[in-house]
Image (cartoon, rainbow over all chains, first blue to last red; front, side, top):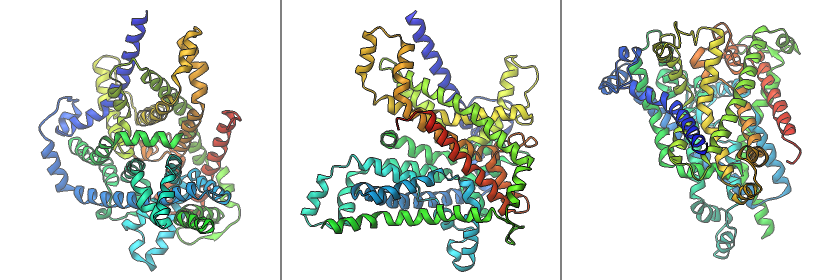
Amino acid sequence: MRKLKRTGIYLFLVVVAIVSIFPFLWMIISSTNLSVDVTQGRMLPGSHFIDNFNKLTDSINLLPSMWNSLKIALSTTILALLVASLAGYGFEIYRSKAKDIVFNVLLLSMMIPFAALMVPLYQMFSKLSGTVPIIGINTIAAVILPTFTTAFLIFFFRQNTKMFPRELLEAGRMDGLSELGLFFRVYMPTMKTTYSAGAIITFMSSWNNYLWPLIVLQTPEKRTIPLLVSNLGSSYSPDFGMIMTAIVISTIPTALVFFLMQKQFVAGMVGSVK
Amino acid sequence: MRNRTKHTGWLFIALAVILISIFYFYPMIQALLLSFKTGAGANLHFDGLSNYKRLFSDKTFFTAVKNTFLFLIIQVPIMIIFAMIISVLLNDSKLRFKGFFRTAIFLPCVTSLVAYSVVFKYLFGNDGLINLALMKIHLLSEPIQWISDPFWAKITIIIAITWRWTGYNMIFFLSSLQNIDHSIYEAARIDGASAVKTFFSITIPLLKPIILFTSITSTIGTLQLFDEIMNITKGGPGNATLSISQYIYNLSFKYTPDFGYAATVSYSIVIMIIVLSFLQIRLAGDDK
């Protein structure tokens, strides 16, 4: 009876794992096959990955899109970590009743759906296009600016700061460090795990962001990778091998970031829900 | 000294407060003002409550609300129960290959919403792999119109979202299960409680905050559903899978731009999120 239950549990988990992996596997296998093979349901790896890749780079802006996405994701991550960690630190270390109220108001922004913001934001950046073109519509800055500060990341840093040993600050003050010096010289190096977890979350969500770039980036050469993938998916006579190759390539950066830093990610998530 | 640090505290948070005000709260107020204006494109003028009147007689809007709530009522509970069961199984210290199962089930979260949507669109196409396989094993005699039939299109979206997000929610359950003191389970075993009884009278009550957290975030996520709809069905067939976010997008950027009415529709999501989150917090009890 006990053995039967064990087997049942393993069977269930194996099925769930297969279902989870399968679309992934199919996409990777398809990226090495020709379109015909994909439509016939071929489930064995082929030898056409390089052909598919060449077709992609010849017909669409694959590499420029990757570069756009990378520039956006990296700048978003750096700015987001800086602003959110300053705030999370400020809220937790210099705690006061007034700051707690401000913090709760900031948290309310998590309840605002992006759909409610997109039209006013679009209007805001359209207006800027006339006066300050470098941050107007169809610029990378317009993608980054409204997305890098999130209440979630501030909350995340504040939660993790609760575990930060405050004696380190006292020691730093004795050594004559300024308040800002304490933050950069003492807090930042101590909180490396929190920063890397925050970096993964931000990089992934920025790399995958779709709706706002779709609205704000209007010319093909400015497009990010999700916009390009979405466009490939809407064609009437799809070249499956080529599309799957594009999807595989677009997934590599986030998969890499995740697998290299999986431990910190899980640790960070634990900190954020405690 | 004390006074000095008190003021520096405000300096640390100033940048974040300013940015969130500019990019969240200011647009929210703008959207509210917009919802009282009508006109095409940039030619907007105040028109009282006309947008709100239009909202209540707008069939497309109600279809979008109905679809969104259908996804919410069916998909969110299925996903959360799934995530909870999987995480409880994976939390068993005697289970082998834990790392493999956890990574495999979390894998879908690494893909972008657009990328996985396009993959699902082809998997569930009329000549897609799913139909091909189901026909080969003689489970089907003719292909299911996954994407072009109103009923199956909804099912496809539900399957897709469940695939993408179950592993994500599982991580939250797992991390909080790991924080539960093992001695509680030891005590229950000594008292002779069965596994099912332990699950319902110990695990679920202890997981309550996480159940609340995951159901609120999933609810907010479902109410904002856009990427999958846009890339799998485009809201179709007809308006069978149209979500509220997609409708707002269409009103603003696909049809003749009607920013005023789009803002009115977007406020309906704000109100739904507030009401539903409040209800969920109340339902979860008064302990928090």
